Image 1 (cartoon, rainbow, N blue to C red):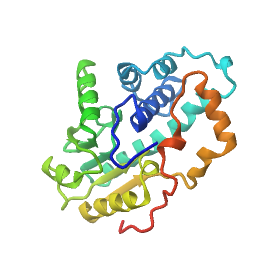
Image 2: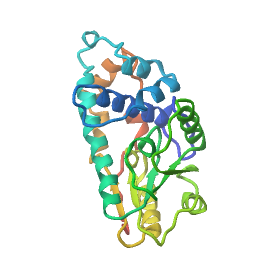
Image 3: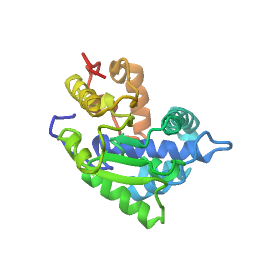
Image 4: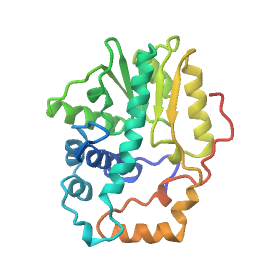
Length: 255
């Protein structure tokens, strides 16, 4: 179960969901005529070293072993989500925005794979261990950012706005913000604080993209539990019912 002061890495707790998402992106990018292009997702997953996700990206989990396992469905869902955020950032830059802020960046490699216009600065905000791991792994892969990438190694429960400004973020210039796959893991008051902080840092013309789960009770539903139990049999141990906060609707926001 989550606590207000818990910690994690890319192999545990909510950190493992970042690895899971990267594995799904790898699947989405590997099929015929893929919606997305992410050559870094699979090698990042392999570098984390979680066996189940390494086997997933390497196609080593036989589909017939478990009727609940559907890699094509995983790929389709993540392809749509990833394409949405990719297009969101590209549309923002076409509108003249040159600051992008990726909150809870995880294994997101958009700073390396999107065709950012000259002069764009991409800020990646996440736990120090996550930032260090991704930076080191991508350097070892020979990857080069396609924008000016600035890392902000800070826990989002701490004063990340100050760290962001210290990294060079200009609150007087418009920015494109993303909070992808984040809100569901925050209690309502933390959601309010997150969006209030974003609003306080956002000049006119700024944009924000996020998504939410309207009813996290689905993760406790008997049908979901049955699905989870069957998936756990082949190694998928992430239990969203233990990771999400079950009163996630933000009560107010100045966004």
